[in-house]
Image (cartoon, rainbow, N blue to C red):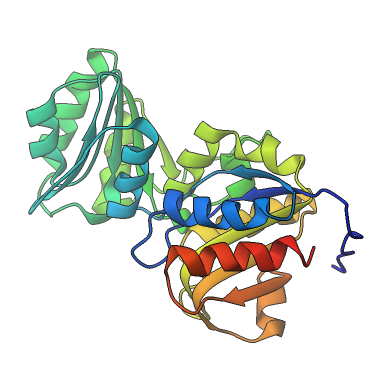
Length: 274
């Protein structure tokens, strides 16, 4: 897809759908990019995303203004309405008790929790908790459908995730999503992207093996469906321009390091180049 660069003085609606970069959280990395882009007078919207695991917990903590509690057995974010946990799910659920919404990261659960987890989730479901199991994007599929852009009906996938724990969530009346899909649905990523003229995503590393984790493919898939150009900002780029385009990325910027100033400068570069 050939992209026309706007003439000087044209304001572009830019969506930053960034993941973590180095030690910076998705929120921090996205905010630094937004600062640089704003210098060009563009309209900027920020929707942070994250892969499953502690980065996902950190993002939920940022969004809910709640602390991220990390223990040797996993992580948890708890508010009056939400409980999100990863790692030792059974222990965390017993410690924090029922909440209206329960979000379970199923990607790094110790073995042998299936029976206890099924009983616990059954109790929580009976108490009215809304259950969501988070799995890797490849186990869910359909990034655009997850973000609510395409109205489709499909057979639930990902039920075999985490040694079958996905099936337990489904049987308890829950749903399975990817972590970028969960954040996208909460933030209205689809409608926001539909109004954008440019989409910027970010990752620590992009190469033929990682492809930027779950976040970058999720963003590029949705952007492709909506016909939006995507620019990638990453600390490490180890891929050719041809391969970038094959992955739905029009342009990429390699950072000097994962420092906020480097991301601000990348944002300024984009602000004056589009």
